[in-house]
Amino acid sequence: MQTEGGLRYRLSILKSGDAEGKSTQRFFYEYDAPRAGEGHLIHTYLGDGNPLPPFEGEPVRVAVEGDIDAFSHTLWDSLNEENRVSLFVRFISLRTGLTETRIFNERLCAKNT
Image 1 (cartoon, rainbow, N blue to C red):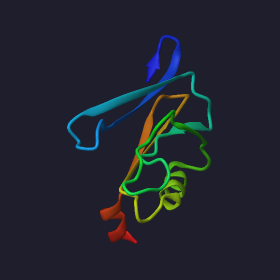
Image 2 (cartoon, one colour; image 1 turned 90 degrees about the vertical axis):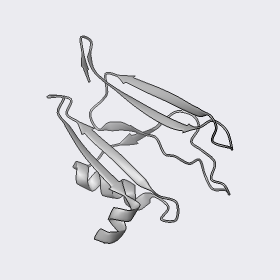
Image 3 (cartoon, rainbow, N blue to C red; image 1 turned 45 degrees about the horizontal axis):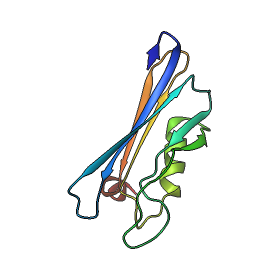
Image 4 (cartoon, helix red, strand yellow; image 1 turned 30 degrees about the vertical axis):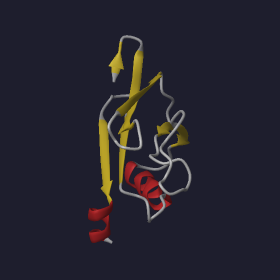
């Protein structure tokens, strides 16, 4: 997103606020003046368990290497196969503000492999 002060981006996550699923929580994370080659990742689960514990804390800072397809596949392949459901990746050009998006879905990816 282009602003008067430069580029910035925002991530959000929506998750259940209780074990019964009767309430929801939405969190936003905003980043001003992003650096080339650096991004942030929200992963849905925090470790292992039954049920899986939900994401907590700040998004994880990641080094972005390669083009969007190589980076997206690296992320997808690093996820636990038994628990992965979907992946959304967006590249934003710091020069032009143009975006590229990749979405992975377990059902669709399983058919394509």
